[in-house]
Amino acid sequence: MKISICLATYNGSLHIREQLDSILAQDLSSIPDAEMEIIVSDDMSTDDTVAIIDSYEDSRITIISHVEKRHTKHYNALHAATANFANAMEHATGEYIFLSDQDDRWYPNKVASSIALIQQ
Image (cartoon, rainbow, N blue to C red):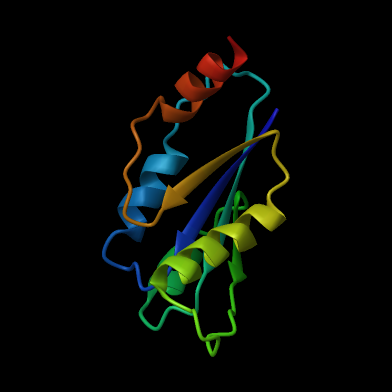
């Protein structure tokens, strides 16, 4: 079973390491065939967010750039975040898709517990 974690980032260097660590530490022992991918859509960060993510050198993590045309009349931060998540989701290949903000921190059983509840 493939599990996709879609993570939207923008200048998240202060929190991204803690969040990635919490995702990578997920206890999936109750799902023996679990395979996890982490799709990070970065919205052109100007800090070292991407460098921090790259430092993991983990094959489960894929970074994609999100380049939004920002000259629309109705563009705002909410639009940018929504479009950034949509970009990540377009690349997800899992049966189950989880969304994650860059400044979240997940409990170790978040994914397994959520899937168990969904399957009930």
